[in-house]
Length: 464
Image: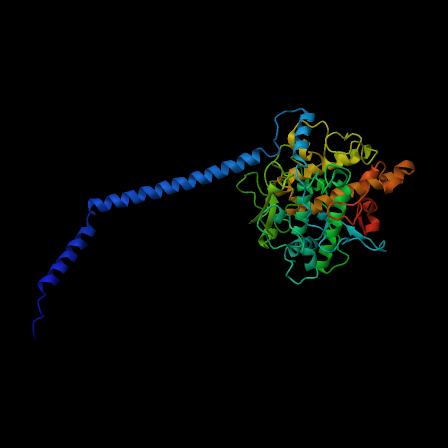
């Protein structure tokens, strides 16, 4: 056998260098290499610190904004707080959106139905019926302009996101109602929604929301294929019967409407069936001035937020005594027909909406802290911190109960007869506020007085 050839000198030199390099790698690196590695590590650590600083700064800004929610003045004088509110409302031209999307009187029957749909308390529904209601809300999110569903044309609305110079989202039949409610605040007091048409803080509060419920009820009936479908209502007393309103298990169950969230700002996301089925928010409002287009935020798709029973201003919804007290208010509304100066001891609407002209907290002056408003504050999260409160399906059950209380007050007045029975049990409804509703100008507020003529009734009404 022949011997293998010996390596040439150049090859031997290369091999020697390779061995030397390999041995060096196994030992300490050259000083200059170690310096480079240490410098790189230092840069990485600096970058990590910067990221943490940015995160902390962002969190502080969020907390500051949340902590300052409606805290526009520390002055406890009610008249000063009202002036602050007045300075914020109606400071632009308004936004005329979302409109009726080609269905101007959707949900209003052409004539009084022979048989009325019955709206029942959520807690009396079977498990199957509860799930069907939630499935209906989820289904409305999927009825988009291009989905081909019967309701698709009604999803072709004008979005406030465009006027607010915010990114577009895929419009759908559920978010139509979020848009309507957001725009009712954004356009408040402007030429688009002058005071006599304002859907909050005045006489049209109850008729406007009655039509909003009627309209989404028709949407739900269509998407569920059930012409007799009726919205359930949230009886606030359900949260008080077990003595622990912070949980309110009859309402906030994971199997249906979802969890109550927590008082921890980092764990506010609603968990359970609703979120598991992909129910997400597409637009909301942020900041202390919810009355301007720049408060609108679109495109930040996220789960629903709640913080049930976490706010000291409303640790629980209104109780039975508060409901009974509404019958002491003998007229529907009273001059000056607005949230700041109207006497809630006289005006039924002022009392039920939740305002008091004795308020000493800015939040209570701005959005109210009693009755209807207490339900929003008590639920917390998106129901309280945004004019996009219909983002929470509970909004519609909550307002169905508000509507039920109005119906009970009307029924008591009709039963009393005489002057209290005028306007279908709405004595004192001001003439100037009977006209077109904001957004749905083809519908008049006065058309909303007789709910049974609109095709529905309640399983039980409160009575004096």
